[in-house]
Length: 496
Image 1 (tube, rainbow, N blue to C red):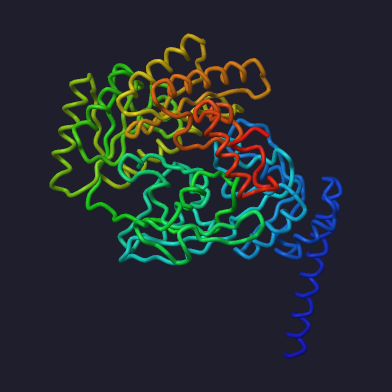
Image 2: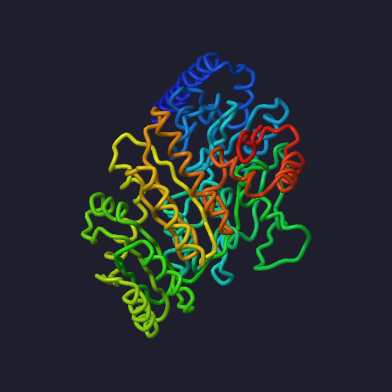
């Protein structure tokens, strides 16, 4: 028995050594093809292990693009970190050799934020999956960089708590911090910026900081500069977020959802503004135009009227929900709203909101092979009707038919989704011009060019116009202070 066990052990070790050798040879061969020095690849392998390094074309291509229309820009090498020490050592190595370093979460962004414009090393954090702590009594938790929104909420299921920030995609939570994401629940719970208490961040030179102090998780603080919000929305240009301490919220006692259609965009948006002005406690108000509704019906097997529509979700006590819903129904009816459909059954509600979350893929299915080009403007609520109507007019005037509108209109944020053939330069140029027009209208109405997607590589020119020369100069100074060698996600946020 002992000899048999020993023989099996030797076989397993030989098998592992063989495969590690094969993997290393594949890595070094691909590295030569990608013109990365073997000694640099070996140094990365020494840090994270051979199984966590790849320079194969397929893996590099996968890490060279997100869900946006931007052309793939693959890194030269991909490394997978398993802990903060891995991240720190890889950052120090890249900084010493002045190799570009691009953090990678889940790849669900829409602004080319992970494209390796100058090659370099892409550091994938998806293996850092620990939920470090949940403090149910204090309504907070701490998670590692690879934990996604859905994973956390599944873990919290029996606690009566939830993390409600919901951008639609099952994004990594630290990636959501990096882009200051929000989504459908922002009207009630705010964005990531309001729900992050502390972060562990690895700086470009490998130093590790805790933005609010190690272990701190208070709901408020006046201690020094707000380093936490410095890194929320920094898009991987200042450092790598390896842990985040987040606010949690109680699961509401009761929830009901509804859908209502309108004769025009103006009527739907006017209803939104009036509902919010009434001070009604509402969790979500989502707008879909007729193109989006048609796409939803086809893709998610719904039977909604093909017309501008609002999706509502009400949360709270059972006693108050019916009254709130009736007031909303009355306001919508005064604005021409009709065909109110209610959903209180959890399965029915989940199906309805899954259809809303799948809208990107539903619209892409209208034009197979297309890539999405999404605008992301946000304005004060009172200016929302004007910006949507003017944007719709500009699209119609340009003769673009493959365009749909969806929006988290409860907080003034909406998206125009264009479906484009990236190889058709004339088409791309037209859509870019329309996106610029929509952003310009929003900025004229005291708004922003991006409510939640971030700047990435697609909105750098718009940021310059929005912030102004002095604001951009200060941002560049901050970037140089944190990242003097310019290795962190180069080509994002700023033109270089």
